[in-house]
Image (cartoon, rainbow, N blue to C red; front, side, top):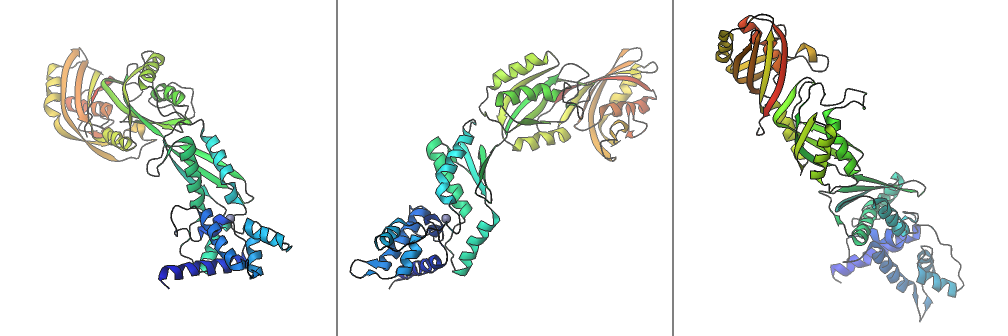
Amino acid sequence: MNSTSEDFNEVLSKSKKILERYALCDSCLGRLFANLGYGLSNADRGRAIKTLLLLKAYNSLHGITDENLAKNLARTGFKPALTLLQAKEISVKIDACHLCRGLMERIEEIAEKTINALKDYEFDTFLVGATVPQHLAEEEEEIWRQYKINTGEMIKSELTREIGKQIEKQMHKKYDPQKPDITIIIYLGDTGEVSIHVNPSPIFIYGKYQKLKRGIPQTPFKDDNTQISIQTLIADPIVRAAEARGAKFHAAGREDVDVLTLGSGRPFIVEVQGPRKRTLNLKEIEEEINKNARGIIEVHGLKYVSRSMVAKIKALAEFAKKTYKATVEFEEEVTDEDAKKIEENFRNIEIKQRTPIRVLHRRVDKVRTKIVYWIKAEKTGPQRLTLTIKCQGGLYVKELIHGDQGRTKPNISELIGKKVKRIILDVVDIEEKT
Ligand SMILES: [Zn+2]
């Protein structure tokens, strides 16, 4: 005998022993030997094994040669064995499958329920997962252990694979565990109840915004969803169009409430959570955002990006070079010499900045080192200087100007020895490369 037929005899003798003890449906029996054969479902495999065992239990010459085996086959619901015993007037009771308790026979029903749950979602690729009752997995492993089976497949894998096949076939979608548009989780309860959870992967929409009116925060203040913010102005129309659950707003830094962002604008990404629609007309959405925002903000360049861009624009906040325009009113007269002094002193200089007093309640108190590349200063009124400041992202510019009680060093106020009365600040450029 070659090794293949030895293996095969072992499959049969193990199956016979297992069925003496447990009633198993075709799928659950076949799944114990899942890596044998080709192009077969576990149910095909299980049925084939039962068929071969029935050949051992009966032949037309001698009749039933192994009544116990025939009974063990019949109680799993195996039709030919049942018919045989009926013909011989031997009564037998069908037992529910010891492992799945009939679950595997409900695959089509579960698939139908799943497909129904998916019908309102747009997707091309999917992933199916399942949670099964703990005891089910344990009992399966117990059989593997008892009968030294190393060819088994977990019930969860079969379930998700079979449901996946149905989705592919009936909905013409593609199984893709790496980049699924949608993840389906099938929850099986202890008493056989099934619930389907559908979780669409987020989509990421990139763009840039200009903030054209002062007094609007980037994100809503805590516990106030009714307040207008840049986030709500941009994200709400996107969430509506995508029929999504919500959105996260990621921006390359933030300007203060009273600061404008001009020039090419500030990069942002809207992470759209739980979208039912994934193919959006971004041009139309852009127009809608701009129309609704009525001149408060303006967005442009909306496009799809991948998740990895989120980290990139966050890094941008810290390191990208930014250019600000500041109109600074001092408490006393300023001179052209003051302007000159500022330009001369703030050239490629490191600024040591302790966390500003005004943000201490939400930021850890530490010293940051940021670079000011240059400042262009011009006297534009008796007590007014207009400054163009090019600096590293993350620098607190107002504090650079007024000094924050000495927490930012060096600072402009200290340099010229004049106190600051008022600052009007605009972001005029955010450099995109990091
Ligand atoms: Zn079963």
